Structure formats: structure tokens, C-alpha cells
Length: 233
Image (cartoon, rainbow, N blue to C red; front, side, top):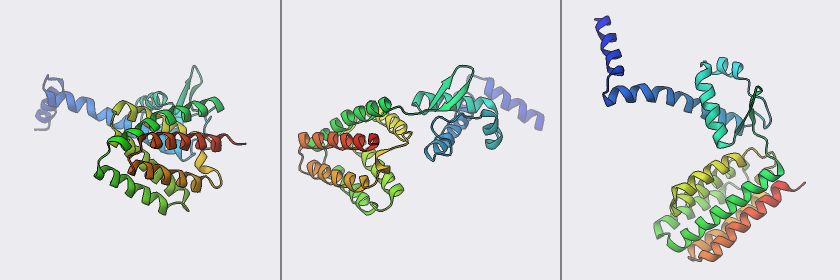
């Protein structure tokens, strides 16, 4: 019976049936995506510091996997900008230069200010009420840096989702990942959380007033101030 089962399983994978093809493709994809997520967590937690060499042999032992899914995961992170591949030297956690930081904040300011204007102009009552709830959560977390950081991301991502445009969402998501590589992220600065919260209050008021130009201006200023904090010596 065992031989028949194995034969039938092999035949199903080699057949042209949709089920066989899906089973064959999804298993390895899920593994390298899980590995990529684990590496992201280590990078964002600074377990893997910017500029650090990624020891593939050590990680394969730590994760209990082969080199193949690890290398596929590293390719994913390289596309996202979190990892830099160097010829004959391997993979390194990306280091943000001062120019990188300026470019990322500038693009985020442009893209998210446009999204804020669209939400202020076309957002319905339920969508704006949801953003208000997320802002209220932000208000409660101002004394807890990590919780504030998470709530801040939730607000920005939801605003982008309400505005629509999946291409903008995809670009911003990747840029926000890269922004976390900056050793001097603006929210780490003393007093920046309170300043950021005040900027969010003004932005939320503009959105609720359906003031599209005001929302765009305030979101742009939010990123300009964040850049100034992130690059201050």
C-alpha cells in the first residue's frame, strides 16, 4: 500500500493537474518567505546591525535549513534594499548614507502628502473615523517609544490604504522598511515623539475638515521635520 501511495503522489506532482503544480510551487516559496521575514525581524531589531556581514553558514544551522531558501530570502531582501550583495564577499545588511536618508524621506514626503490630500478630499466618514481611532491610539502611546512606532506605522499604512493606489502603497512599504535601517531614525530622538504627535494632530484635523491642500502641506512638513531630526548631529 505504501508503494502505491508514493507512486500516486509522484504521479500527481508530475501531472499537468493544477493541484500538483500548486503543491510543487507553494512549499519552497513559503519557506524562503518565512526565512526572509525572520531576517527582517533580526535586521529591524538590530540583532543584525547595518553594515554587518550575514554569515550564511551560521544562519543555516540556526534556522535548520539549507543554503537554497536562505539565498532566495537574501535576494528578496536585496530587492527591498535591506541587504546589499557584494561580489565574492557575500551579503551585508545595508548601511544608510546621509544621501540615502535624504532621498528616502523626500520620496516618502512626496508620496504620503499626495495620499493625505486624496483622503482629505475623498475619504468617507467611516474611513476618516477609522483614522481617528488610530490617531487616538497614537495619543495613548506617546510615552512608549516602540508602541508609538508601531501605532504610527499603522496610521500611515491605513491612510495609504484609504487613499488607494497599490503601486504607491508598494513603494512606500519598501521605503519604510529601508528607513528602519537608519541608525538615527527621527523617532529615536529626544522629544521627537511629542513633536510627531503634534504634527499628527494637525494632520488629522485637516483630514476631518476635508482640507486637501492643508493635509498635503502638513504631511510634507511632517517628513521634513522627521528628516531634520534624523540627520541632526
